[in-house]
Image 1 (spheres, one colour):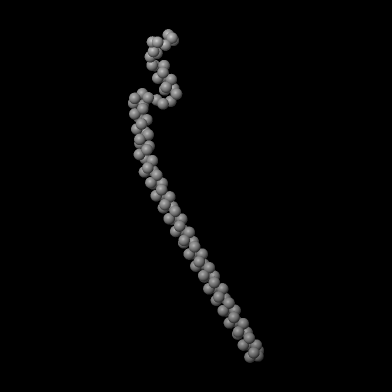
Image 2 (cartoon, helix red, strand yellow):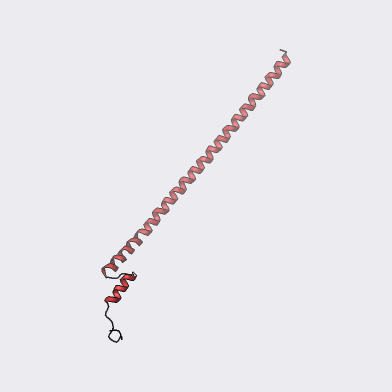
Length: 105
């Protein structure tokens, strides 16, 4: 093999090694970028999840007294014999006394 041919092959070999190194570096940068984006997405998802959990807890704390108040009102209504249903109103009307000036006997 001639010296010129050998130098040409060495130069081509060095260029290929440089290109391989460049590809490797580019691939590593892409992987690092993808990992960074993945971590950012995970962090955002974790923050959103915590926000939603906090919202749920806050709303549950808000709803709880309202439920107690509603339940208390229902209990009071049952204790007083008041039923807001149609059947309750009908029974109440039937059990009430008819005014004497009504023409119905």
